[in-house]
Image: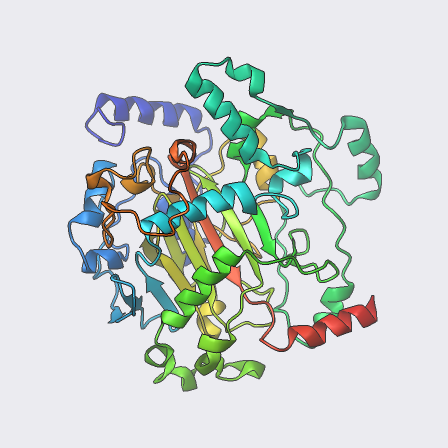
Length: 489
């Protein structure tokens, strides 16, 4: 019997084990914010949270297909009526688009990315984007080879599959730091607060404080010496993020403008620009833009079809039990232009609230292929996050440098067992069609054709990949800031 069935012996056994392993008493939640309470609710392991009041816009389009996978994995279903929404026609996207009047500027594009494009993007995230010169959380602590962790993991996986002794090709990845070197570094480095990690609460980036941000020291993080060397087969599952485009400094929660602007991945750029250009922004902002404070940028939504140009982003690799907190994005000077978020793999709950943590957030169900766009003053400054859990002590050190997006961020729950069939080991079978697209015939240009998808399917069984993309400077301004940087350095 399935362990998610409360009446099953497996569930009762797991519940007893959970209670025995949980030594802490129930916390006093009286002083918790509305956002924190919702995070706590969706993290719950026993019992699993019900999703009755979670917004599921896909169910407004097809009431059967999106729900069947949820039910088979033991999850209750979300509702398209959890909060009022408005549907917008979207050229070239059968799922259309949805806006949420209570959160001006939030646009949900269900099923925007086709299944074959999702597979191609997943492969690129693992093979190309989590690779030098892009920085990852693993690079802080481990001597990851130039070819990246995925190539080593995939080689080991094929050895297992073919019956070759897998230990022969399971490369051990050593630490950058030793106990002695770490001790020397700690003499000059500030000590870490314990327990936990103090939060950095930076003011929003602006023209006035840009020189201060620019002059703030951004030393490289100190590699940990207490982590064990790990084989590639295990270390891949510790991968949590990869910087793409402009370099982000996690210690100061700001971009490192002293570093040369890295090339932004063309595949991600194309998808994000296509999403922004597909939205009829006049239908989103035409009647309500005057009620918002657009600051120095003004009501720039009319230009987004042409002016939107992403130059920074994070590729997040979530495992089922990861945990991160709700956050606000403050690191971009361009603070109203669209922030584009792409979902791949297992489904998750996305929380978005208001300008403070005291505003109760709206939970939204996001599936693989969905795109969320946050735009405008209030939406871009709203607390939001996706939720998961932190696995074990070893991973917690790695996670101390891991955030789903600039500033503190989080996800209340990744929904276990919700990987769509078209991302499984046999993506071409007829019953693996997505809600919006038929997979009986591959489309021309599907780069996953002829590629052994099986290792990617194996990794994605417990994984959710989330790509968060931003435009740091308003178009035309970044060149002026580049000259300022060169002058000040």
